[in-house]
Length: 495
Image (cartoon, rainbow, N blue to C red; front, side, top):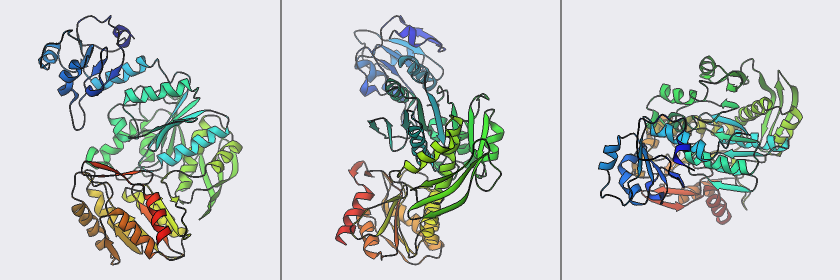
């Protein structure tokens, strides 16, 4: 595509060179630049792309877009290239990248419904449920989320919940080429704060809840909520905003949006609610009630009592997309589980072992409450906290684990560059503060899982929390293969 076509509608402060050149690809990683590409230099959380302009040009970049004036860009070049690149200056590189991506991938969302889901917990499960409902309705949904990005038989591994705008538009183009009718997208607070979805025209937006997370990035709960609320501001009344009104910030969000609001919850008078909720080891049954559509009985294989909220959320979204209650019930029942979300681990000892992604105090508390509801015996909890992330939640998670477990096994999660011992000590303080005395610290995660499984009796439940679907562990700069589910199944067979 020609550069002049790509930059239509973008406010270019200054342009040095001719804009009638052909652009082969766009990229914001200098190492991925090839001849004929446009390099977009952006300021990141840890690095500044402007520092890599010289590298991008040395690799053959035809054009450079940045927030620097052309003369400053030229100063970044370590040596004069054979062909000086076209240099474009903008006020906001990140915003410009999003517009460029939409143009380069030919407005991929043009013929599809975009559904954005945000919130601290429940995004992934809600997206799986909605996908299943849409499949039951005979539609062709795509999903972009924490576990993976998928449509039909095409599955891409996910390294981030919500991709950068360029990667996002590339994925949406692939989904459009697969004739997607709807795309369900998990939208993280980081993505909203950084404008990754700024040019996505959502048909339906959904708020699950907000509890402590990512304060290493946002610094305060108010800033975290403000980032989440960006998905709901600036919308027209033709957009549907689905809000969990049982969450304390639900009412605040309602006041911030101009979209048509659909509420869901159990503790308030809502547009969508549920009654006669029953939860067991075999799943959930309930009566789903919609003011607009009527009532129907639902059954789900999900085993978390909190999953009734995810079910109501997905049903609410489906209703905005014109799906009837019978189809909604069918879709809910046919969805058999979500990777790493209260996932039962089959094992030769027939022990109840559950792996869950809970990595916040609220998510861990809800997982433990759900576990206690379906367990006659003890709760044995294995968990750690990630390094280089919000340190403040470690003590809180220790308190939660100590309060709701019969025994706690403190271990490593993804310690990254931090000392695993120091992380464990912060968790341990919370466990001690809870009054729990039956706990051990075992930093080798496989050994901690083995200890918990070997301690388990017939009626006990082993909860392995924090990593969920992840099939790796990051220690220092090393990423090694590690899947809680595989490890638990293996150690159970030899215990």
